[in-house]
Length: 203
Image: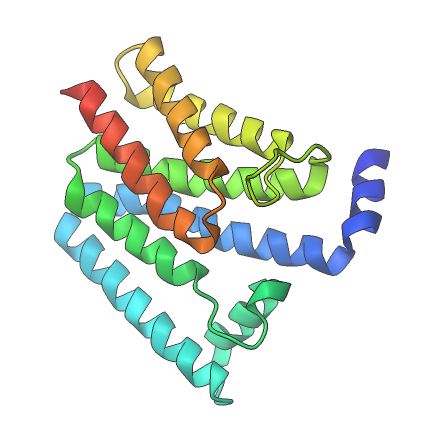
C-alpha cells in the first residue's frame, strides 16, 4: 500500500487518474470478440462508425466546439503529450480492432483483440502505478508493465491456443510488440502482429 502512495506522489494523482480513465476505455474493446461472434459485419460497421464519429468529435473539440460527453471523456483521458491536439488513441484502437477482424479468422482475431485490450491496457496501468525500472530504448516502458502484458496475454492464450508452447510464444511476441516505442500506433501494431503469430501457429 505504501508503495502505491509513494508512486502516486511521485507521478501525480491527476496523471494516475488520467491513466485509469484511459485504460478503462481501452479495455472495453475486450467486448469486441463477443460481438463479432454474433455478427462480424455488424461489429466492423459499429467499430468503423464509432471511430469516424470520434474523429469528427475530436476535430470539433480542437476547433473549440466540444461534443457533449465525448469531448469531456477525451479531455479527462488525454495525457500531457495530447494537449492542444487530436487524441489519436481511440482512433488507432478502433482501427486495430477492425484490422484484427478483417485480417484473421477466429480465434486468431479474438486473441489479437484480447492482447490489445488486456496486454496493452494492463501494462500501461500497472506500469504507471508500480513500474520503477524502465527498459532502455522503449520510450519509458517498465519491467512491471511488460510483465503485466506477458502474464495477461498468457492467461488469455491458455484458454484459446491448443498447447502451452503456442501460448508462451504468443505472450512473448505480444510483449515484445508492446515494448516498441511506437506511441498510439501500438494499438495497431500489437493486434496485427499478435493476430499474425496466432494465425501462423494455428495453421
